[in-house]
Image: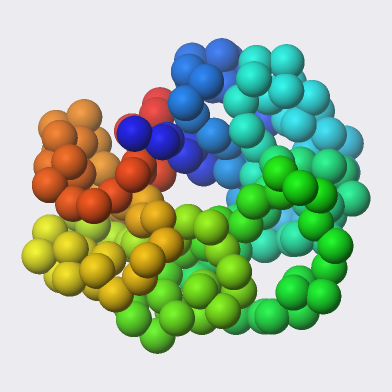
Length: 170
């Protein structure tokens, strides 16, 4: 499985616990990004051979030479299609329904994070709806939402190539 860990702040101890199959996605919607903090995370992830993505800011991701950018489900912009990406720059994004899946496909993301597989906030797809929705796209699917050590094996029943979360990685 590919693993994606969402972080909101830079803590070396958290990144040290991850293996090289884990990618870090830095997202912080509560405050503006601090360039120095992003550069510190980028440099530390490179030292550990961990891929690093920035959420919802493609221009900054490109200028800081990150591995890619994460487009949340509420980002429906297509402006980035005019940008020049380096060869290995990857776009990934999340969706909750078929309409959002189609938007992510138009945004040319490589992987779609389909949310929420398990109950975490009262609103979730469940296994059957998740499998049904994932069949509507030829893009690689990443399971997102409510994943724990107890239910991680269930992901193998889907066509997901990995999973993403927060609490699983702590």
